Amino acid sequence: EEHGLKCCLYNRDFHPGRRFYDQMGESIESSRRVLCFLSQNFLQSEFCIWQFKHAFEEDQAHSKKRLLAVMLESVTDHEFD
Image (cartoon, rainbow, N blue to C red; front, side):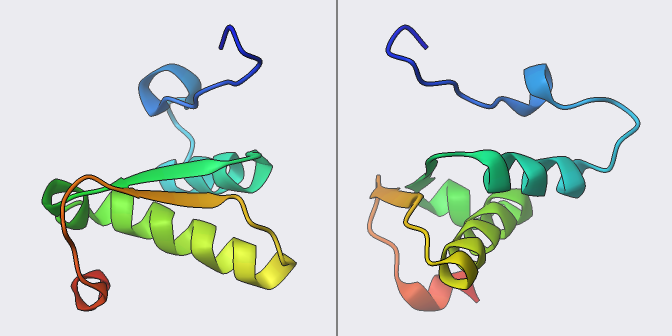
C-alpha cells in the first residue's frame, strides 16, 4: 500500500450480509490487477477457481489485461475444469 497499491482482503473489505460471490466479482471488476498464486491448494478451492475464471472472463470480454497468474507449483490446464 505504501507504493500506491491496495490489496483486497475478504476478511477486511467484504461486508457481512452481502453475497460473497457478488463482492468478489465487484472487487475483481474494479481492480487494476488481479493476482492469482497458482498451487495445488489454489486448485482445491472453489473460491480461488471462481475468482480466476471470473477475472479471465472479464479480461476477455473487455479486452483488459489485469489478470496475472504466478505459478508457485506446477499445475496443468486440465486441473482448472
